[in-house]
Image (cartoon, rainbow, N blue to C red; front, side, top):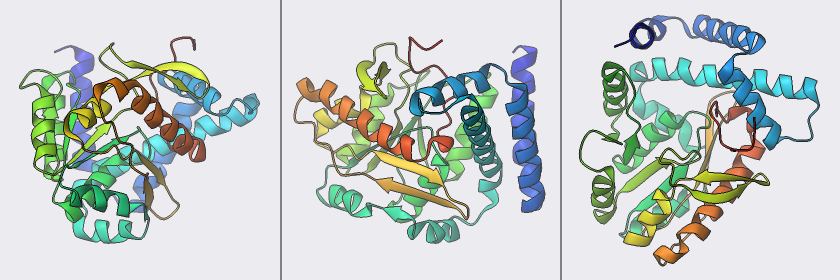
Length: 292
């Protein structure tokens, strides 16, 4: 384990121990201040976020783009503040609070009633852990895949965190092929949630995304083709008082030949959702190969 890996592990461990004990106004103030400092200093992640926002909002001048980036860094800090506090929150009360802010729940209910499960692709937006907590409380859980982080101790912390919320976590590498677990979940009529706005396999499907070529993972559409489960792309964002998300109408994938078209359809929904709430899209990694 390198020094930086050890420092990251200890930092996240401290976050889960310390932040949950702070009064909410204090925690909010500290994280907002840290976000503003990070946005002012820049750095690789902040600059990448700004570049990605330039594709989402090409109409903005430099000053407005800087302001959007600052709002985006604050939104990302809010995600981490909530993540550190979420294990201490009452999950039933949280789900009750979220219920009124869900749009399109009927699409998920209809998919599950059909008995083939449901595949929910989503972006790195808002607080997807809150979405997951709501799904656990209302539908008994779901399965998802987690990227294997380094060091291993940090990965295990994240697995323990999300399993404590009721998520079924399937490691992307280092164990059984995750597709087997996802297929089991769908064949049992359950929900599968997959963050799908960034391809990690280097075998992604080429899509048009905000007018430029990008790659997105074929996994969600491939699972839909194999099982008959519909794709229900989800948009997630923050509100002043909490969270909101939208379950979009189903995208069906009748055969493997339709996987590229279905992946493009998911990308189109993602683009619409991100364009409505760009500050809540926390994409600090490269999406477009031609964007420096």
